[in-house]
Each structure stands twice: as structure tokens, then as C-alpha cells.
Length: 240
Image (cartoon, rainbow, N blue to C red; front, side, top):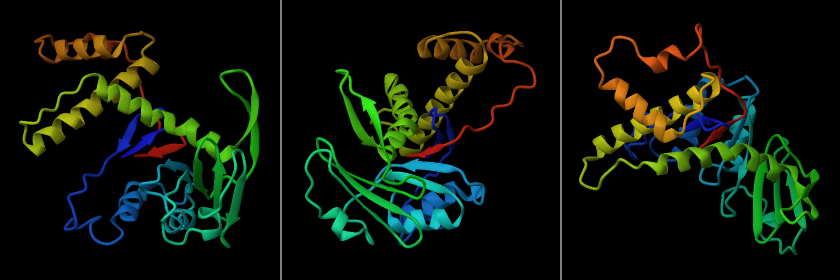
């Protein structure tokens, strides 16, 4: 799933297993990411993703396609620098290594070890205030990741408010309902941003459902969207 940093979903791929002709087989995780981003190569956009996807090899492929990538990294990924992954650090200590083609792998000790990779950010630190008001230094790569992955967390939270799938449903029905749920949340986010009217997600859902089952020719929700409305994707993007 490819989404804006606000949580608006832009593209999805349904992975159907090893037999998937488009993204199946060995290295299918990398194939899924490349497929999701195929229309955006050579444009210099930034992509943030979690450790399920990230690897040195994938970040290198995206860098060659002129796409910046930042994310968390699993310590057992192939081509990870061992002196970074195996380093024993005390709190607030860090270790960083660069590949020959400019990819940064950084390990920072907070309450636990945090392993990051980026083709855009390095080992720079920024002073931030904690909830208690104390200042401390944190890596920019961690701050930027937390900043832009928040939209995905918000999307997951909004989808969880009104779950519609049931164990008795066939898989294709669950998939269709999941798509409708995402469409509803996407629509709500766009409505909230551009309509000038404030509603809760619950109110918005009820009004959409009411108008879908209504026999009226004109829909009141549609009237609140500005004429000649276009929503252009906002960068950076996040991948889930």
C-alpha cells in the first residue's frame, strides 16, 4: 500500500502468493515496492517504509531510480554492515556506516536499539524536548521517519474504529469490504481538507450511507466540494 504522509491511500497491490505473475517469487517484497512506485521513478520523491520492506538492496534500487528512501531496518537483512548491527551501545550512543553509493545505515540506542537506513538522511542530530520538558539529541533520520509514518498509523486507527469484516465472510468479500473502508477514509480526509465543513468520521459515514441509499438526484455532500476540485498527491509518501 502506497500512501501520502497524511494517510490518503494512493495505490494498492494484492499479493496472491508465490504464483503471482507480477510480484511473486523470490524477492517478492522488493518487487511489490518497485511495482507500487513504478510511475514515480526519476522524480526525486521521498518514500518512508517500515522494516518489513527495507533492505540495503531495495534502497539501492530506489536510489538508482532517483527515489529517496528512509525506514527502519531488520538486523538480519542481507548486506547489512555487521559492525553496525552487532555493536553494543549505551543509551544515546550511535554508530553509523555508509555504503560506497551513499546509503546510510545507523544504529542508535534509545530505550532499545533502533536500526535505520536512508539514502536521504545521514547521522545528523537535532535537539528536541521530551514530554517532561527536558532536551535531548535525536537523529534526524528517526525524527523524519516518525513524522511521515504518522499518517499510516492514523489510517490504521481510523480503519479500526468501524470494523466491518467478519470471520464468516469469503476472502474476496473481506477484500472488497476492506477496499470500501479505505475509500471511505480517503473520502473523509479529502472532505475534511477541502469542504470547509467539520464532521466526525462517524457523521461522515452515516451521511454518505444515507445519500447512497437515497433516491435524490443531487447529493448534498457533493455540493460542498469546490468546483474544479483536484487533489494532487502530497510528498513524502509512506509505504505499508
